[in-house]
Image 1 (tube, one colour):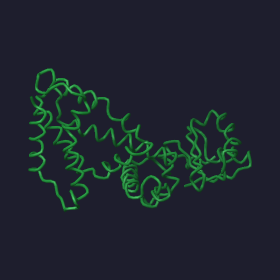
Image 2 (cartoon, each protein chain N blue to C red; image 1 turned 180 degrees about the horizontal axis):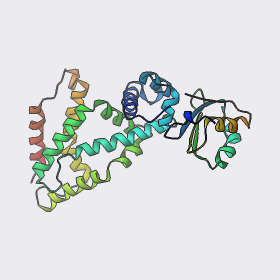
Image 3 (tube, each protein chain N blue to C red; image 1 turned 30 degrees about the vertical axis):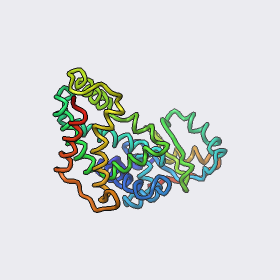
Length: 196
Length: 78
């Protein structure tokens, strides 16, 4: 009897992300995935109706999971410095621990599936993130600015460091490992740039 | 009727020779009309043209019979 088995579903999801990252959307196939998971193609089709359905479902589940993790211990009412610090902690940890998922999101962003990730982020995540920024403006901690400007200063530097780390190489191909010291050194600079 | 092959999620998967859009149009009315079929999909991109059916009460033989009625091959994947 075939049943929806939680462990099997997790294995399928994990292998699917790995394969999608390594083979690209074009090179990926349901047959390859079934083989990698050592399950029959029939079993795979119990979970997903085709390749497109698989990519969309996994993208939605992963963005919900990641946005949920990014909210751990985060209080949108916290002071700007404390709240941003918690965000950096969460984002650095989860993006380094879920490298394949991060790469998968990059692929999605530059593909026809782009819409899926933007739509599936937790509503709670979007609300808390914008509430946090509005609070900081209202308390006079930061100047009002377009959300894109805010994001580019507040998070893009961290994302770039994590990218260097996950790729193992930085500028000019130099070997690179991100340390806590570097994260917090960059954080202080970001804080200085944003705080009034 | 062998109910042991109905999985708890009520999803059945078959290999078919429903190769083209025209073939698909031939079997669609039968699957659409069956009230016991809550959902169905054929992956024309897969080499085995896999048919996925969600049903609360039908067994594989019922689906096979349904697809065979239009002259197409349908084999359950275990």
